[in-house]
Length: 454
Ligand SMILES: *[C@@H]1O[C@H](CO)[C@@H](O)[C@H](O)[C@H]1NC(C)=O
Ligand SMILES: *[C@@H]1O[C@H](CO)[C@@H](O)[C@H](O)[C@H]1NC(C)=O
Ligand SMILES: *[C@@H]1O[C@H](CO)[C@@H](O)[C@H](O)[C@H]1NC(C)=O
Ligand SMILES: *[C@@H]1O[C@H](CO)[C@@H](O)[C@H](O)[C@H]1NC(C)=O
Ligand SMILES: *[C@@H]1O[C@H](CO)[C@@H](O)[C@H](O)[C@H]1NC(C)=O
Ligand SMILES: *[C@@H]1O[C@H](CO)[C@@H](O)[C@H](O)[C@H]1NC(C)=O
Image (cartoon, rainbow, N blue to C red; front, side, top):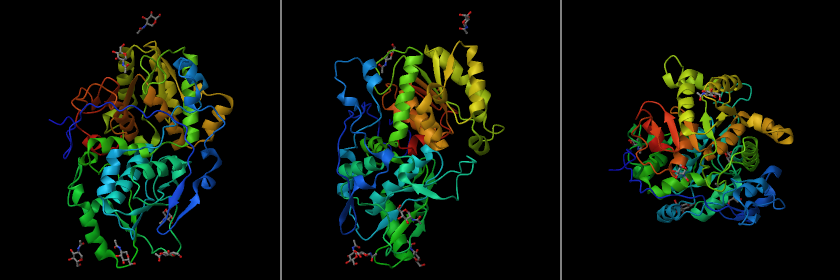
């Protein structure tokens, strides 16, 4: 029996996916356009995006130094090499490509979990159709009101993600796919479509027959336009693409085309280093998950979530429910320090107070960073700051979050690749393995398990 209960799922084989070894590679970046390949990529990069080739690369630290010394010297422990995926290459090689068709993906919005899923789905549909794709753009959340997410201006991909990494990963893993910097002025005007609407049925496990999507799309397109070179603007796409309809290796690799922007990775590295120092933690800091070090918590009680999931209706939206579960789990985990991620500063103070009864210390990125590092953090927007938390939480010995948060699911599902326990959706919580607990009613939110690319 497949352990992932999604329709079309292929069974987990328990294969461990280790992070690609961190390598500093100097690339020459190319964008491919319809007819020409142009523009040295380097010249298009924003200053913060440039590789710090003079700085110490993680792999320049001699291998015989302890991992503690390694961490002392590392500037960016999250600088993964571009994805080189045979599973994705195979799918792309089988695709019939259409140089006349371009997709734009400019409607992703919300927090990082939402953005990742929507951008990856758009890319998946572009591969299905054999289309070219412009660099995705995303909706910029209102900095003055975090619950104001939609109907707002667009911002470039590098607002959250590493653009050179995306381009190079796709060049290696899906060489037939053309990524365009932007539309040309003579391109036809985009036709908007919600990709899932082309399917007959959508269940919590995703659209029916993703393998028929291409045919349905071309049927729709021939009715929608007769221009020679159509441009199709895809709507936001969220939790409706059944990721296990592709081979498991594809599903697990795909999300790695997205790497967070460099400055957030550097701040996350500094945060972790300071955490280790402040609480005198010891462990193997080169490993993807840091055993016996700290407990990671995502306290999801920010204003946007309280509006979306009113605590009067959603038990797990309540502060009390989250904090009680998290503190019990932390006390049982044997760690004494908890790293808490939350966009709600008052609630963190309340949580630290409650943690005292369990003799647990609570800390945050704001407390761990000082001086220029803290200034860098504070210059980030709400969603950029969340990237720092996301990266820190990936490393925690044990993690806790709630089931109506794609942020928590993203972290837990990524960690699950490294867990031994495979029956993670059978309780006692919504998602349970020895590395993470996602709290909620068992089997309630199947769409996250079936449709969220880890
Ligand atoms: C692309 O358009 C050209 C005409 O502009 C046509 O000759 C060619 O067959 C089209 N290719 C596809 C895949 O539709
Ligand atoms: C979508 O993004 C592309 C690439 O950044 C850009 O060229 C295009 O004008 C955008 N389209 C819309 C409708 O915003
Ligand atoms: C736009 O112009 C370029 C070169 O000027 C040409 O190669 C391309 O085919 C044109 N695109 C369309 C949609 O006509
Ligand atoms: C195309 O339009 C025709 C006429 O309106 C309609 O009967 C047909 O179902 C449409 N096909 C698709 C794939 O939308
Ligand atoms: C973490 O520590 C536990 C208990 O000491 C051990 O059983 C487990 O194998 C370790 N996990 C990893 C990933 O090293
Ligand atoms: C917390 O620490 C104090 C003093 O070391 C001890 O008396 C108390 O029993 C501890 N409480 C818990 C819940 O471990």
